[in-house]
Amino acid sequence: MITRRDFIVAVVAIFMTATVISSARFAGKSALRSSVFHWGEMKVEQTAVGERRAVFDAPTTNLTRFECHITTLNPGEMPHGAHRHGHEELMIIKEGTLEAMQDGVTHRVEAGGIILEGSNDLHSLRNVGTNRATYFVLAWYPHDLVETATK
Image (cartoon, rainbow, N blue to C red):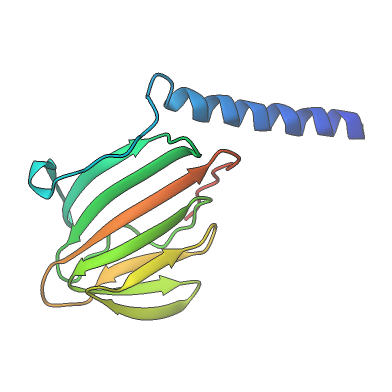
């Protein structure tokens, strides 16, 4: 029979393992400091649904990880299916029209609009316009986050 003590030890061990794995991923990376990122200097990666520009992905003074990328979706495309994750994301629409599904509710978001995806909320995006849609994604991972991504 599992005792309460055994259960607590197992939970602490799992938490510590997750923390070590998360820390190891960014070991050796210095904390992101005040910076400027120029559009013309960003490497463009072609994807099956459009383009992606990686801006940064590093720890900061206050976060285990802070990540920014820019996605461009071709008309009718989705970057991936509906999913949820422990971290939070903010998306700023640069151009185009997106359909944002959040926990079963769909919103139309045009250029200049902002989408916030809360921790563990089911969400997805689709370009519903006739032109390409480009949006900035900012994702932050607090020091105490245990990431459990699901689809």
